[in-house]
Length: 203
Image (cartoon, helix red, strand yellow):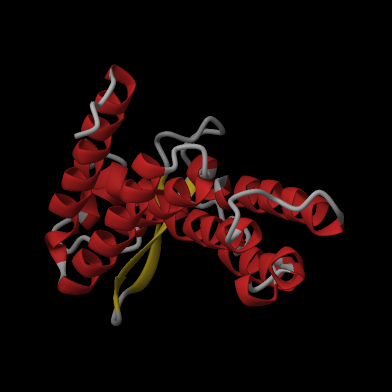
């Protein structure tokens, strides 16, 4: 039986906490729970077995970010709109404002590094680094924007609530550009599919 060193023990403990915590938060609906279990489980396993390979970390990040894309039906819309919501309600809204786009960036990064876990040293590597860095920066814009979009219902539509964490100041009248659509267009144009990655094809 292989002994686990202090570093490995700490890593496994941290991974267990992240996976269990993610699963607990994912119980809001079966689809989120299934998606989180698959991504977090595989990601944690790869991180434990191959800690230097970023694929496991990307899968774990995708599972955590996916939690932000699931609507929370119990939030207080009136309090969010007035900027007086509880920390729990506001942080879920704030996290969800950028989690979906950042998750897409992680998927794109996964396509660039699959299957070896490293970016190419040639043209694809340069394109990948620039595209991922730019997309990640754009994905985080809603987190610091003065207002956050909130889908209320089919009848009401969406409203904009003040972002009390914005370093630019909270302002519900602010309208940021459609960051998510822009990221989807830009990254899709340059991200290679894993099956046709130049490095994979060469092997």
